Image 1 (cartoon, rainbow, N blue to C red):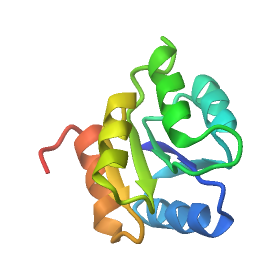
Image 2: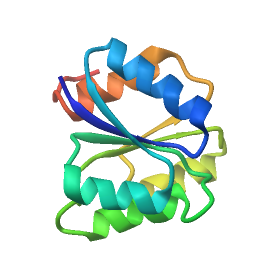
Image 3: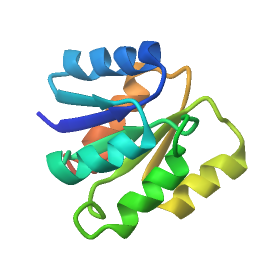
Image 4: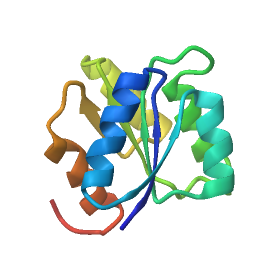
Length: 124
């Protein structure tokens, strides 16, 4: 069972992803903003963060970069989950430190494979 953190400013998206992860047997906390996810990651130390890009305060790119620059959170992998489907967005996410990118709408398996790969260390 992995300890996961989901951040999305859309309650619908956040709750859907949370349910997918809980059904798969994981412990899930949620956040609604980039600032909140950075603060919660520092205190809760999740195994993996699923990060939206478009949020009202600081976006997911900025939050991912902030997590990479903080020694207390730099080891936590971030997987972007976004409706942004441009190659430039995916490349920018990787440059900020994201370890994966999933485009909405997604299949549950698209999400769960990152847990196997980044938390469990399995080849996918």
